[in-house]
Image (tube, rainbow, N blue to C red; front, side):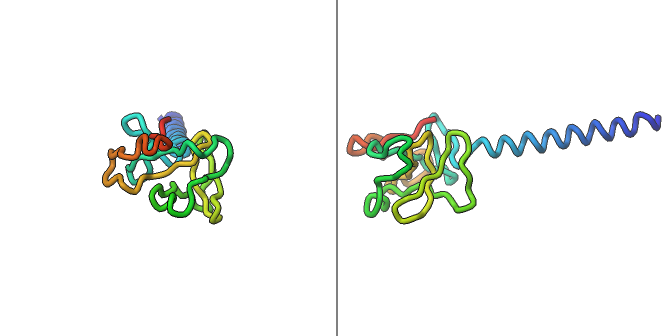
Length: 131
């Protein structure tokens, strides 16, 4: 019996460490947004949008000033790191913003609750952010 106890402990330790490692990888892969009903949503559950005038891969948002008041950017902190399809761009004011596949991500000020999508198609230049 003494030979099986260490083996059982090793197996338990291996399974515990494996689960922790997988959980860590899964959390890194999710990025700053989640998918809800086919669209990207922010950590607050609110719908995210892209702006057609931003160029994919351009690394720049052209929505500043009053535009950013109506379309608040999905901000990134200085400690956030890009991963997978998510990158971080620097805005004109020097602050950081998340982008998905090169397109900066925004909220719409007139969406009042999670699930609202009232900004889709606004002025024919705002679109739902889709995975």
